[in-house]
Image (cartoon, rainbow, N blue to C red; front, side, top):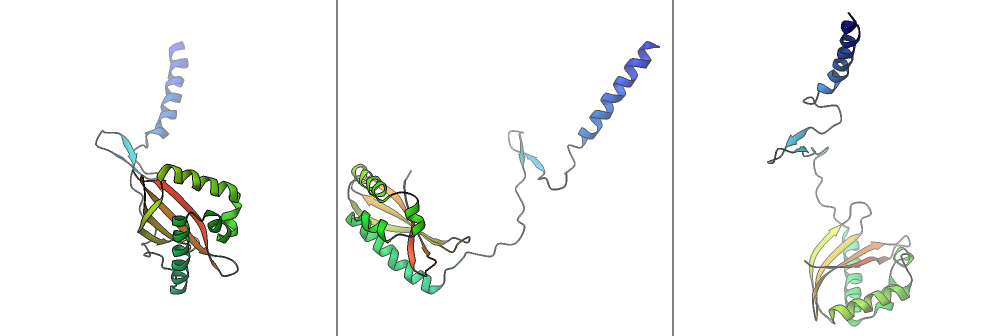
Amino acid sequence: MIYSRTITPAILVILLAALPGCKSKQDKAGQVPEQKNAQGLSQPAPAQPQQPAAGPVVAPPQDESEAAAVKARVLSQVKDGEFAAIYKEASAGFKAVGPEEQFIAQWNKQLQETGAFKDAKESGHTVRSTDKFIVFSYVVQYERKKKELVLTIGRSKKGKMELTGINQREIK
């Protein structure tokens, strides 16, 4: 009698708690169903696109033309080591990242590592969909190594095309 009064309710509580957890094979609303990979481990299924792709973002011809002039100027300044001029002619947002002295010091340190600028070949050109800034990628050959150089150019609030970002990365 004691057995049926204590054990039976305990078993019922365990079964009731386990039942909601048995829906593992059903997809819950808003969740990505899981799939098994080759090793038998669970992984999320690839997300399905919400809308068809609209295609690449294209800048207006005037923006492309003005950005081409800025990129040519900046590449020439990098080649000639005119880092102060790059900084002075860059956008206000660019300058807000850090002081001119720091920018010049970083580029001079980089030149000690790589040697002089020899050549640059454009490897990519895109337009960011978020702000319509134009991004140019280059493979730059220095005396001692190659690096990827990325120039981001955008229109200021005053209407002038300016350098908004310059980044350099190791090429693996």
